[in-house]
Image 1 (tube, rainbow, N blue to C red):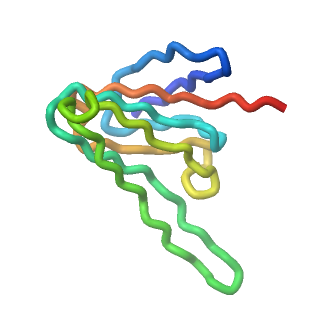
Image 2 (image 1 turned 90 degrees about the vertical axis):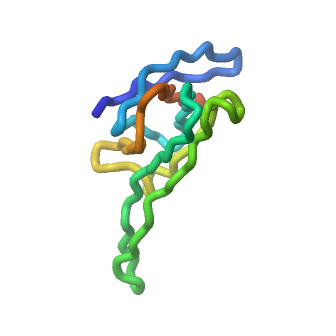
Length: 119
């Protein structure tokens, strides 16, 4: 499992770089982070983003399902897909990270990009 480095996009742009994806990665998340996947393989991939269960007064424990996304193969949109942003309450683990798994990481690259906000 790798911890992805987050690259920050500003209004003048970002020439982001991809890194190799593994079958299980985490990324720091503040609610403004996106994952950009590039699938160099013709076969689609299944991305699963871990979600947190919730406990609400009057409702008790609520099971929140993980989110599953099909990432296209290279023949569809060049294999590119953007996923996110991720609401922290729903997706962050106790370390403030989003955790995801891929069913197959062959020929997969990923970039984590955060949107800068201006006050």
